Amino acid sequence: MTDNLFQPVALNATINLANRILMAPLTRCMADDNLVPTQAMAQYYGRRADAGLIISEAVIIRPDGQGYPNTPGLFTPQQIVGWQQVTNEVHAKGGKIFAQLWHTGRVAHPYFFDGDHVLAPSAIGVEGSVPRMRDLTYQTPKAASHVEIAKLVEDYAQAAANAIDAGFDGVEIHGANGYLIDQFLHYASNQRDDEYGGSVENMARFPLAVLDAVVARIGNDRTALRLSPGAYFNLAGDQRDRAVFDYLLPQVAQRNLAFLHIGIFDDAMEFDYLGGTVSNYVRGVYHQTLVGVGSYSPETASQAINDNKFDLIAIGRPFIANPDYVARVRDGVDLVPYSDEMLTSLV
Image (spheres, rainbow, N blue to C red):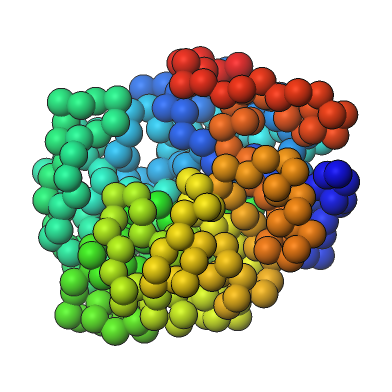
């Protein structure tokens, strides 16, 4: 009983999707040493082109945004050409693909870009070490200056333009999962006392500036956003966070984006300051096209869409295990279970 997953969807007058199943962004750390996408990556995405829309793995907008090894970039001519291989492969198979634009903020590490500091809203570090490189511990970041914030906004917009040059159908701004934009939206990581912190309007100022700059560059029809109202990854929650998103979400709705995408690993998680799950909270505030995610099966996703919990479903790890995920669900074929060993290669 998953027929509604296979209904075509018009995001807007520009972009039509063949079905309601999105491939969620999945960090694979498989770019070359210059952060250029490879032919193997092109084939990997091409095999999954039956998705209504692929959201690429997160793509760093500039060198100091890197926090993991071999994550692809979108700031050099070579990287743009590399992504053209990917988008050509997806389009040749009839698919559509958005680039997820990423800066990791305080989760970055100078090791990757030969720098001497990382940028964040405030000089508040995160505990732990870099995944896959456990000898690299996180550093206390530098609070971004007004000049640095303005340059970040500019670089997000340039990365969006680069994405269109690379053949992407649009971009999703990564404003979730404890990375730079999300760090501005939560009190645990934003303790500024200037126009970028303190009040809910100030905490939302940088995220909205990025959003507006990207929309101005490539259009709201080709722009999407991912948000995590519930702090759960590289962030601690705060009761005051809800007020930030109570203000931000109506502001986002006014921009008429292609879609808003929830950032959560498991949508069964509940947050007391949100009154339950993230998806239920967001749907209560945001009534435009919403993408759900977080450990849904085809059946539970279909039911959630039927119940108007969200409009589209993003599927993550099952797409790693099943390049033909859409066909398997449509034809009632059992899915191959995901295992962590699958992360060692692009299949």
